[in-house]
Image 1 (cartoon, rainbow, N blue to C red):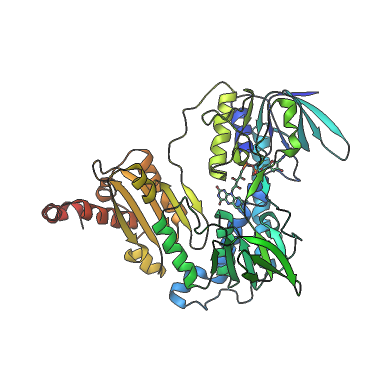
Image 2: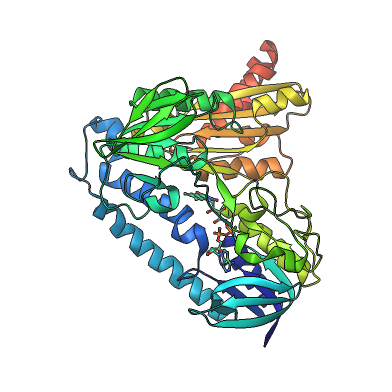
Length: 475
Ligand SMILES: Cc1cc2nc3c(=O)[nH]c(=O)nc-3n(C[C@H](O)[C@H](O)[C@H](O)COP(=O)(O)OP(=O)(O)OC[C@H]3O[C@@H](n4cnc5c(N)ncnc54)[C@H](O)[C@@H]3O)c2cc1C
């Protein structure tokens, strides 16, 4: 029987980071992965494929140039599924190779097969048809992630009715598409396909979308999407899906129907814990297959077994999963880390993209903190002019008494990169003055921070002081 200091089940972001971290601390580590290749949902069906698809669409459609050349501008006139898949395959190949190399460089062993517990320290792995191996582990990290929710009333057929894992194997581009579920995944795919001039309708049972994002930003976002023809059916639940002439028709509560060539069901994911035989190690998952952990150490109720990544639920991001893996591995190796900083960024790679860090205006109001906002439109920056940007908005929220930054919310080109400036200032306890006093590269979109800060400063500063302060604040 093979024996290891740490056995990691799953090779997605959290499993990978946990394994490499423990190996770097000198421990013997095995990663068990049931998939054909290492990388997890993140590399094969989630983060990397969707972001590669997005980048390909933006490049081939000439999306970023349309501000100058008009909405009919195209780099490639007839974009086909094959164009999108070619770049995807290349990117995935590179990601897997990098990962394989990272494991071998750090002497992390890998075993392909389906893992299930025999008892709290022993794991059985089904390697090839019928063949099994037994592995002993001093400590275990469960990093099995999630799989798409596939409710029985949705007739999935891998061709015209798909889940988000199947979408990355698309054989032909539809002319129209219904996206069910306006969470991050649904919104990303709906807007990416809409950028390809596919007629998209987004269906969501709640009356709003992206509830964790600042409302002003979401309103601006929805306005941009409606403007380019994306349809919304908010407050509408899908009761069933029927077929007419081979095309799926979503039958909504209240009698409305949405017909399209393809239906993407992207309303939720469930923890992939069912094959683990959790009872044998003394654990049980909740009704959505998720595990409960100590949020500081990522230990489950069984102290030598950790769980990280999407299997523990919110926030279910590759970025946070990586950190959770690192923290769990350090704790398991007896080298605990301080807790992660309070604020992490959220990146939504829609078209246009959204990124946010810290408190939304709604959360600040709820907390009762007196506050002020500053707003900058990207078209107010020279860089925005040069790039031909029409949309794009940065909103900054600051506390009136301390001038401390409370939140930064961005929609528009480069939002997911720009947000890290706000994140640094926020987690280091900085104030509005940081943006006013520091020199920024020019011309950049980051200048929007300065403009938003000056906007907030103007609102915070009584009129006479504001006039006197003009010279120092370089208005
Ligand atoms: C469409 C989509 C887009 C996304 N975009 C982003 C984004 O832009 N940014 C971001 O930060 N996050 C994004 N995410 C989320 C991100 O992909 C996840 O947060 C991340 O993959 C979770 O990592 P994980 O470590 O939990 O493992 P996962 O990546 O879920 O991988 C788990 C692995 O465990 C394996 N496994 C499961 N059960 C067993 C078993 N019993 N035995 C052996 N192996 C097993 C699976 O085969 C899988 O390879 C996206 C997700 C989706 C679906």
